[in-house]
Each structure stands twice: as structure tokens, then as C-alpha cells.
Image 1 (cartoon, rainbow, N blue to C red):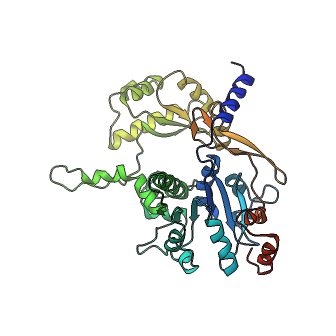
Image 2: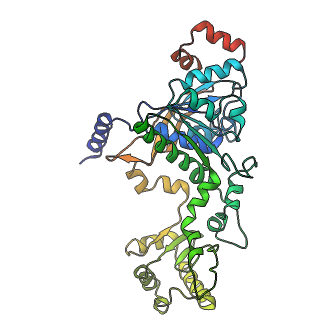
Image 3: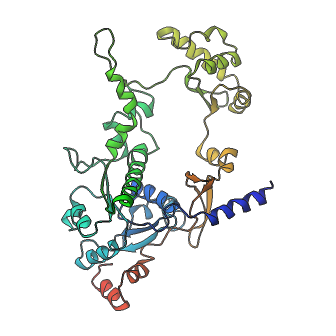
Length: 408
């Protein structure tokens, strides 16, 4: 099948298949990363997402450097296809405007510290009483209760407080920072997405929404649950030592190549390890995969010396001919433009009237082979304010009055 025919077949299926979340309306009151990542997934799956932003300020990420043209790259990456309305939630008239939007909304997602929405008269108890079908999701660092509920923290703090930093840094004695916000995305955004979808499914059976309480630290702890279960192992009557060491063995680690590149060896199973030893011409280590102490270090040094004899490309080509779980460490640019990423359609182009042509990573979820990824541009701050207020019954004069009151 030609490329043109394949592309047309893809678009035909896309046209025939309704997006999974078509008809779902989401009010997104969050700022920065976790909420935006979550609602970007909802947009890509067909939901209508309305960003409720503070007048004159908006989501802070709009203005964070570096800018593409007028707005920050991070904001542009995570707000494709959304709508923007400006509402001052501290203003009585603004609060009424939000309540009017809640009349037709399916989901409200907020990321304020616990108690803030309640003090505004917009807390989960109040909103779910007035709108029984509404799914209310609160996404915070530590959840709605507990001694840390009001603690100020960011992604790196969450990683450190949950033990995860030992695993992502590769060192227990010298934990290091990581550029990837694992907590915000995996502990927060993905857990919020799961909670929201589960609550919507439950509403389909019961007719009632749910209050979803998402804690980033809870989410991170759940990621390491299979590691912490080692505590339950009893050995010779002694209490087991918690599994707090990073898993870094000669057969499961990273090696530098001749040109300064790196290769990942993930040869966990003996059959893969045997192949690695064969390709590297180190047969003496084939039966010593789980060596410890000085012997382990000698094995690691032997492999490191071998990998430094060729370039990353040369080793990539060599191991492409053998099943050994040995692959190159790619940069993000290389990964997003790899043949596999291209075949899966994992990059999309967005034409923004102000920012120009933008390239973004696509939604990873596919249905019947079809990936839904909106290529609509990000909204300007407050771009859809009048349209959205009109949709819930406000007339031209009422909208003008809201502006006079600085409610929008």
C-alpha cells in the first residue's frame, strides 16, 4: 500500500470513528504542568476543555521563558485545542459565571491548595451538591488531608519525599536532580486522568459524579509499590532490608562509547546476557551474571572497556543483528524523529497564527489503530470568554457589565 493510500485510509477511519470523549466538557482551573498534561490528553481524546484563567495573568506558563514568539514553549506544548475564558474567582460576579459554566460541565479539575476552593464557596461539597453529575477532581502535591497537605513543594521535592529519587538518579549516596518531572506527570497528571475517567464511567452507571482526590506523592508511592513489597520477604528469621538501592548491575546499566555516546544494556534474562557476552567476546562472564563485590566491578570494567572501542552508531548496528536488549541512548530530538516514532505518528504539526508552525509530541493512545491528537492551536488568554458566557445564557450587556466589574 502506498504512503498516500495509507494516509487516506487513516483519515477515512478517523472520520468514521467518533472520538472517545466527544461531548464531555471539562473546566480546567489548574496552572503549570500536571493539570495541563492531564487535560491535554482529554482534549486529544475528544473532550472540550475550557481553561479558566485569571484576568490579565492567566496560566503562568504562558509567560515563562523561553518564548517561541509571544508565549512560552511549555504552554504551547500542553494547551493545544483548548478554549480560554478569564474569570476572577474572588469576584462575586465572576464566581456566578463559573457556576453558570458548571451547569453544563462534566468535569472540574483544580490544583489549588486544600481549602482554597471551599473558602471561595466553590469547594467539592458545594459544587457536587448543586451539580450532582459533576466530577470534581482536586490535584495537589499531598492530597486533601494529612500533616503535609499545606506544604509548599515542587516535583523534585515529591521525588525526594517518596524515595523515588533513589531510583531515577541511579545513586543512593548522591541523589541527583532529574529534568523529567516524573512526579507531576506520572504521580499527578496520569493519576488524575485515571481518576476522572473512572468517575465518568461510574457516573454512566449511577448518574452521579464523584469527588476525586489526587495526591502526587500518593501517586509516586504507588509507582514503587512492587519494590517496597520486598519488605514482606522473611529470610532466616531476620527482618528484610527495604529495597532502597538503585538497580544498577553490569547487565542492566549504561555504558559510554568511543565517541562519547552511550548504550543501554538491559540484558536481564540469561539468554540476552549470554548474547551480550558473545557479541562482546567476553565468554568468561556468561555464567557470572549475578556476580557481586569485586567480581562484579571487574565484570563492569570489562564491559565498559569493550564499549569504548566502538562508536554508538557502530554498536547500534552490531546489536541490531542480535536479540540482546542493547540499544542506544537517544536525545529527545533523535527519539522524536526516529523511524519508529514516525511510523507511529508521534509528532504532529500545529499551525498557530501568531507562533507559526509548531511541532509537538502527539497523543500516545490509539483506538483501532487511530491516534487522536488535536492540531488546533493554543488559545490566546481569554480568547473564548464572550463565546463561552453567551453559551450559558449571558447576553451582550451582561458580559459588558462583567467586564466593568472586572469579573472577567
